[in-house]
Length: 573
Image (tube, rainbow, N blue to C red):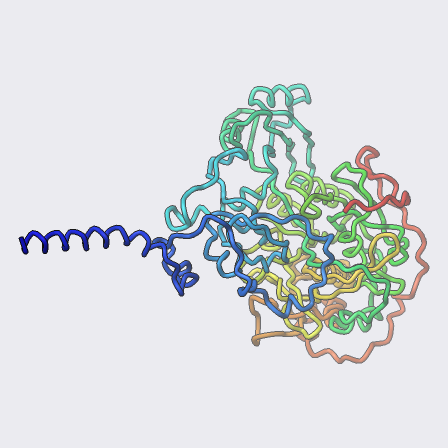
């Protein structure tokens, strides 16, 4: 009897203990947040998204303190992706909650696999490598598949959906090119014979839901097709824009020693092609500076803040002063307004390079960035082979970004940015390809409709260097691109670690030293100009000031010309 009672009690205890275990597992833990971060595989989370108000985004205070981007400049609020849990927890944001668009290098939750070639975060997981815009999202975690595929996948997402660019047989008529497109389920958007490449390039659009990579392979196998690639996107490299009516001091002039350089040269009779967004040719700062215009987009958009600012950094000559105030600007509109800012593509940029090369450009300024692009690489090589100097912005994707193009192309002078304290502009890209630096933070420049802007970005660093190169070419028109590059780097003012480094390249550009060296180049070693005296030299008799009479535009195909620059169209933002 006693034994039966004891057995009954033991069975009761076991039963009650088993029944209580589920409730014990669901009890709240005093270190719940720590468990989520350290052992996510065993934690049972609520399905209701929450926000941890005690955790702030990790943003560089030096940048955040200066940021004054108006609310209406936030282009979109992409949702955090599945798979970015660690980053989301660090910022107090959970999957499914949107966040404001920070500058490219300050996104609070952006793993490298989700970063585009320009440093921008994507609002969805990296797609599978079938190349299709309608394919399913990648379901594996970062640790469950080959890591080497992630950067390329991210780059693929930076191409225009359902568009391909192909080199086709130049003997094909338009009808035959259309028939080629139909054979592969495509529509020919346009095609053009590019004298720069000696090739005919067509832009095609996929008309059904087939993956882009499948279509690309099929098209490449056609006997009338030489090569096929995505139509990559490119983004302008500005960081922030704040409208203002003031006239603050331009610190860049003193840092670059432009006043001294302007006593020797002002860029007269040197043509700089600015491949950018629309330029306001009616702005007082740019009066009679625009020698010719070309709209590679075929658009009807008005002037844009970025293009107008770039032209001002080069040629402003009213309240402000550009680096080459007498230079002639070949204004090429290649970037049109889009939801995330002004964008362009492989096909449009190639049209722009082709036009610049055929219309007398001596320097090409490219203040934009994107992925490594086989078609644009060919265009740049062909442009450089014609003796044209190419300058590009290093990019605003920050310290962790891979090299961006076209700046990383060896034929291009890549320019990083500095601030008023001669420190590196925080958003600037770094790398062994950086040639030199120039001011790029808090730059005061013209804006459309006679206004002004305070803006930042390596875009403007590149523009300053393009203008300095124009000063050098005025003084010595015989300079070759490699000689100009050597003078710029050898006369640069060393910043950061002694000698060349990945932040500033050879150092910050010194306009006066470079122009002084260009006068005697190549007979005199350019290193001698490093210690040139800071005193302003006596103006040369061949640099007498001239009136700014309107410049006759170069001949151009009527159908390729943009709408008259005097139309004063409203800007499309």
